[in-house]
Amino acid sequence: MKKNLKIIITLVIAVAIVVPVGILAYTSYANSQNDPLNFVPSSSTFLVKVNYNGSTYYSFGWSKGFAIMLQMNSGVAVSGNNLSFNSTKIPVSLYGNYGGFTLYNISLSGIIYGALTNISKNSNVTDIPAEYFGNLSEYYSLYFYEPYSNEIAIGTLNEIKLSITSYNHGSNFLAKARYINNPGSLDFYFRANNSTTIWGNYSSNYTYLFINGNHTFISRIYNESADFSLIGYKMKMINSTTIEIIMPLKVYSRVR
Amino acid sequence: MSSNFLKVYSHYFKNYYRSRSFYIILIITILASLITSYLTFKYSGRIGNLLPTRLSVLSKVNEESLILYLWAYIMSSLPVFSSVFFSSPAISSEMENRTAFYIFTQPVDRIVLVLGKYMAAVTASIVSILVYIFAELVSAIAVFGFVETDPFLLSLFMLILFIFAISAFSFLFSSLFDKNMYAYISTFVTYFIIFYSVNIALSLVYSYNAFFLLNNASTIIERVYININPTLFVSNFSLNPAGIHEVFLSSTVFIIYTIASLLLTFLVVERKEVK
View 1: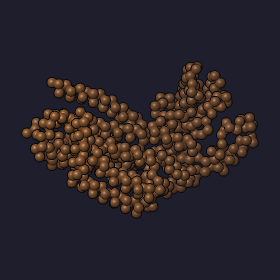
View 2: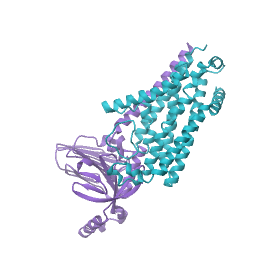
View 3: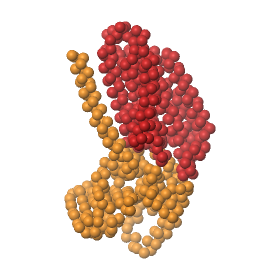
View 4: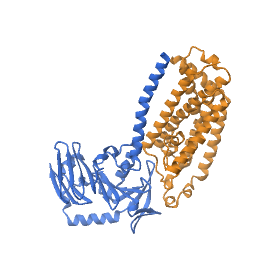
C-alpha cells in the first residue's frame, strides 16, 4: 500500500508538472508559427500594421531608426543581386551574418543625401537640435534580411539587428500582440515613454484610440479622417494606410 | 540514499567505460568525425553550389551554418546508437544473465539502482560523443577561423537533453523485456521505423508536423543552425535558424520523454519478479 501510494504521488506530481509545461510549450510554438511579430522587438517604440490589398505590412522602430516588414508576394522579390519592387530593381550587396541570418546592404546614400538636401533647402530644419536626429549617416544605408521565405525586413542596421535578436532571444512582440491584432486596415502601437502608451485601430467605419498612462482616454469616432490631441500628443489619421503621430520635443529628449 | 546512488553510478560507469560497447561507439564516432571533417575541408568553398539558384549568389556567409548543420545532423543520430548500446541492455541483461536475483535483493532501493545505472549510461553516451564535438570544433575553426558560440552551445545543450530522453526511452524498453535482443530491436524499430513512418505519413498526408515524436524533436540539434527539418517534406525553406519557441518546444518534448519513460521504467522494475 505504501509503495502504491508513493507511485501514485510521484505520478500525480509528474503529470501536474509535465502537462502544463507541455501545453505552454505547444501553445507558444503554435502561436508563433510564421508570425512576423516573432521579429518585432518587444521594446519597439512604435509598431504599425497595415492591411492593404490582401497583404500585411509592419513597420516598427525607435526614435533613431526603423524597419519595415513586407510580404514577397506584394511585388517585392529577391533575385540574384537585386531587390525588386514591382519593376524597379535596386542592387544589393552582401553585408554579413548576424544571429544566423544573412544581412544584405542596400546602398541608398545618393538617393537619401539628395532628398535630405532638398528638405533642408525647403524647410527650417535648423530649429531642430542636431542630436535629435542623431548621426544622419546611419540613414545613408538600409539593410534587409529574410525572416521567412515569403517575407523581407528592411531597415536601419541597428533595428534590423535588434529584430533578429528579438527572434533569437524570444524578446519579441508576440506577448503584446493584442495591441495590434484588431480587425481594420491599420493598427498602431506607440510607446511615448515609460508611462504613456498609445494604441489604436483604424477602419473605414470607426477608429479606436487608447492612451494608457497618467491619463486614460478612449474614443470612438465615426469619421474616416480624424485628428486627436491629448496631453501634448497630436495624431492625425490621414487615410486608411497612413497615420501621423506628433509628440512634444521635450518628451523625445527625455527618451534619448 | 545519495551514497548508494553514487556507488551504483560509479560502479556502472566503470562497467560501461570498460565494456566492448563503449569502444564500438567510440570507433563509430571517430569514423563519423573523420568523414565529416573530410567533407568540411573538401566542400567548404563550394557549399553554395548545392543551394537553389536564388540563394546561391548571396549565400557565402552561410557556409559555416551549413557545415555546422551537417555536423549536427550526423551528431543527432549518434545518441540513438550509444543509447541502444548502453541503455537497451541495462535491465534486460540483468534478467537474461540471471544477475537480477543478486542485484535486486541488495539493500538498495530499485529506483536508486535504475537511476544510478541510467545516469551512468547517459554519462557514457556523452563521453563517447565528445570526440565528435571536439572534431567539429577543430574543423570549423580550421576552415572558418571562428565558431559562432550561441548556436554551437545551444546545439550541444539540445544534444545533451536528447541523450537524456533517448536513454530513458531505451531504459523503458529494457525494463519491458527479459532478453537483450528484444530490447535492442524494439528500440531500433520504434525509433527508426515507427517514429519515422508516422512522421512521414503525417507530413505527407495531412501536412502535419509531428513535433511530439522523438526523432522529429531531435532535429532541433541541427535546426539551431538552419531551420530545415530533414524528417519533413517542405517545398520552400530558408537558411534561417530555428526560433526560441521551437527550441522551447523540442526541449519540452525531450523532458517529457525523459520523465515519462523513467517513471514507467520505475513502475515496471518495482513490480518485476526476479527468479
